[in-house]
Length: 185
Image 1 (cartoon, rainbow, N blue to C red):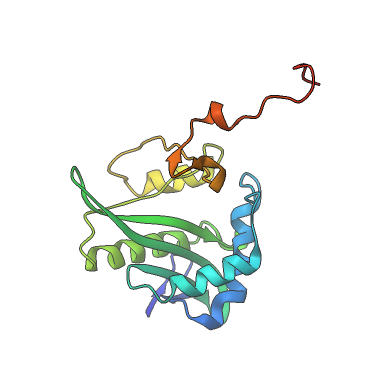
Image 2 (cartoon, rainbow, N blue to C red):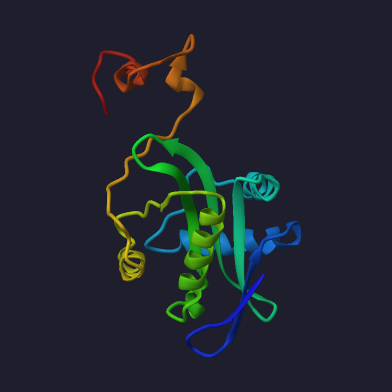
């Protein structure tokens, strides 16, 4: 556990999450869903709770929580994933959120710093994250922490409909033609 004083002179503890934290963490995901964020169409709180518990058991993953006293005020998740030929081992910072009432107090910086320490201790060469274009406040925060580069990320949701007989189907092949006379309403 890391116990530090945030820039606003209050004590903040950063530690690895435990199963007892799951309910509070699930509530905290609402901070990510608030505007300018969005709730994923397929968000399922029970499935998310099961995933959090699973992540807590995997050595290549961590969930860090920031607390002031007994209050959860921030969290982040980090995952060691690929070994890139060009860049080496990557750590992916998936979620980083601070309670809206505690933003701009140094908690995000503490979580980001501890995620970097966690990744470096596990021989990661770099850490990356993606952030929706609408999250301009988050981008200013990340820029203040001197990223080595910026990039644009593209993503695709995958489903079983994307494959037929084990082969990926092009998007055009997955789009069904309208029924009837071919006119669209």
